[in-house]
Image (cartoon, rainbow, N blue to C red):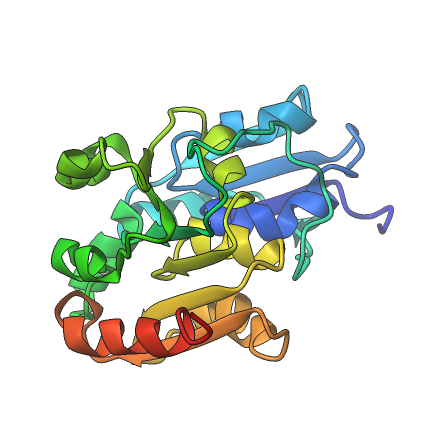
Length: 258
């Protein structure tokens, strides 16, 4: 790292953090790390790997406050944190399977972040979302499922919490939730932190994504993984309302060898 660099910027959400983590854990304390994010639990994400004394956290909620945050950063001797396609850094936690059988575990993350939801609404893009009805049709009795999301989000699946093959994952410690991804044999998700977690750990991932260009999404979170064998993509006109197309994609790609 150049001697001229004294600040490193990590910007975005959990997916961006995951791609930057291998570099972040090697940054010396003499370099300031600026984390600019909409994820309010950012300190908890980085805390297992650093005492955070050289970290500065700047939060934003929407595109307007993002622009304001960017303009507040002193640019000289600042670089964007390099990214890694895959993550070698060890998880800070290990979790045990919540299921009492050895059936295949499939992760499902039907939700995008609130920031993405608000931004997509502003630009009239279809919401990052797999509907509850669609998730119900994906679930099979001979598989186990981890449904990821915030406590508020996963409350719509509360009626499934006593099902023997479904577990809702919404732990307040982000690394406990992320560690559950490593239990999964496959992951079905919208473009989200859980999808990136599975890809950086080379877990086969089935992505449901809006069929429109998004430079940041495509450059960092889709294109690098298309040739890895880890990612299959369904480009849906409107993911939340493309139930039939999504179910057919899952049947063909996720369950093809069953």
